[in-house]
Image 1 (spheres, helix red, strand yellow):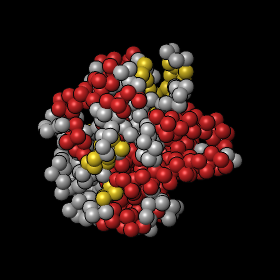
Image 2 (cartoon, helix red, strand yellow):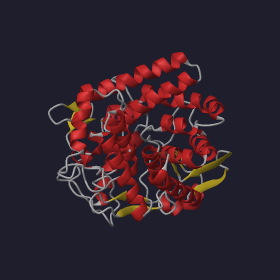
Image 3 (cartoon, one colour):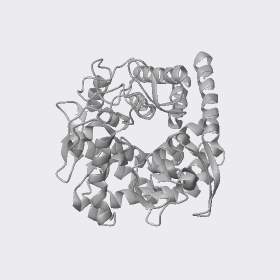
Image 4 (cartoon, helix red, strand yellow):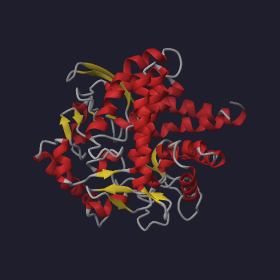
Length: 425
């Protein structure tokens, strides 16, 4: 690193350190007998440990405090279930926030663990946390748990064996109110109550079958082979293969590489629309495409084995000023989609237009992997500018850069990794 880029990175690094000190949660949970140490997404709205948030926090922590990065992963995995499942929320200190919980739509496996998944960023988090001294011992400690989790996803969430895992509720994608689900869920309005009612229509019948995954699939209330989820799934299987190789598990590494390639093939063969040059989710047992142009449609760019011609089509959308080339990229919905709504101040609807730091992180790395470093640097630079001008917010207006949603939002701290990429050139 050198010069201005290094100074910018170092300033952001210290800002992230301060943020993560403010949002740090430490204590002892009597309900399970474990100590915990993690960064919550936001003290004002999300004080618990969320799965994919925690993984992004780990990536950022690897820049400021490697031991805390490892503690983040350990806390996430401490309540892994015997079958390999890891909850999307661990309510470590539930008793302190009972009133807040009344505002959540959550399906529970136990009073302290949700019964849902989130995009499986876990292997990338472990890879970041394993850098530096003590990394090998850390991998020896956590990799068996990580492998069990990905085996659970493969076994339980891919019943048709096409390499694509399915979400069974809209919130499992982490994209709760994205417009790509509107038609599938039968949502016509934009009131929060419309989405809550749709969630109940999906999750309510699951309770009658004891939330048994096989029976939930059979109900066909919400089965989505989500492009964002499966891009992250494919990338993390690939990374897990690298990690297994690094500890001498050649057979495990080979299995994960094969599974990762199968996921990419499934995305390209089943989700890619060559005419549109976009990827679309598959809905229901009939696998009907959800033809809405959202940031999910671009995310396979993050996969290093994506065919070059497909990657170039995605880059074309990213650089189109009618779609995604906003002053503060990358919008979560194409700007020429009728459902694009960047100014959602005062509502609790998310992923209907604003730019988010975690998808910028994936897309910038994808641009670099496919030889478009100049565009990646632009995304990285504008991402940094968002935080520098308006702080760590949950999401940002793509036109004005105004931050909205939760304040002191922790996964936005992954911006330090984005700036690090530019500064190391």
